[in-house]
Figure (cartoon, rainbow, N blue to C red):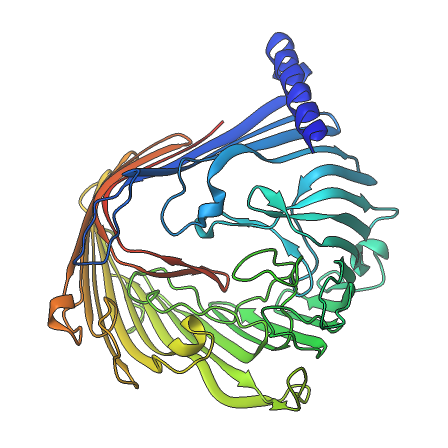
Length: 552
């Protein structure tokens, strides 16, 4: 590892000097980006914000990439001094967390070092970074992509996954084949029809050191997929199978895993409809059988729920349940034509979305096995979301967006591993987003959000999230550079009167070219944030925060 780190830095330095002395046209190109997020922390017992000894915490990242002809080298420096609250404290420290050397031609693509990759939808393999979650399962090893003919690509990889500043115990091996029928045989299909096929194999090796159980050292997973699309429809299907893999997250269960993902959509002039469904059973797959939380995930379960963008509609996000879930999502979008009664002068866009996720049908056989009929659906509702979005422009200067959400959230499943404590939350949310353009450069925007919620279990202890909420936001924009924002979230309907708290926050952002700077101050409520069904807890905080991001 140290050898690759040193080699990458030396080559990057040489390449930079070459680019500087000869000009980027002759000496290659150097690019990169930098980001830092820092925050001060004031103890606030009212909202449960803890005392932070350092008073200031920060996360910083620097990416540098040098490209010349078919070669590319790069690295990412990370600094957590110390990591922001809500990020795993094991990130503490600094150093080169990601580095690679790559050779890429039309036929051959070779990477040594760290890399990200995804096979199909990710059901058996996805290596990626999601910085907002503190998630990074990059593979450190070797990856080879081979394209012998047009429309055929083979990928092989071998390595270990990132675990904070170390590597996971397991060795991950993978192979993937993508075939594009249209590119391989140009005249076989009509011009407006596209057909793609794919298949993947992934295995993990980890020594069995358990004194009581016989654990499989090599765990294999495979998948096959089909994609068909045209100018008016799209259909994707993927099936995956994983051999038995007793682990901490499935409570040492010896059942195999299966997954089926079906996605279909049709679209035309002014409308679109999509229907997505999947059935997942025991598909938690990791680089270490003892890993928990978001550590060393090998695969990814594509979410079937809408990722809301407003504060209150995103209050109860869904986290995918790889050990067992059956769900569907349907969405219909329609653009009401202009100059009609409902469309008005500028037209109206209507979006209706429905998602439902249930348990799978399963019966316990003994401590280590259960029976789960393929595609069987259980009675327990994990999550249900019905939402309507109506976007309308009333004039050249004024537009609105109305969002209505009704959801059910099984808090025991999402936040307590299924053990009874909180029960289910039922929430109804209404949001009105209004924007008025004062002139070509000045605009004001206001959000009015309200959530009424109830919980079907008794409250055992006070908390800062239950009950009804009101959220109001004002934003003033001076295009293209300045953004001024202030908002207040008020938990006025909390079951406990002393927890009916205002969360007031204000910020200023400046944008110029590829650089964005934001400074803010105030209270931030604790909760859970999710991206793509992967989540992390965010503690409450009170203080000044700074964010700087730039690319070059």
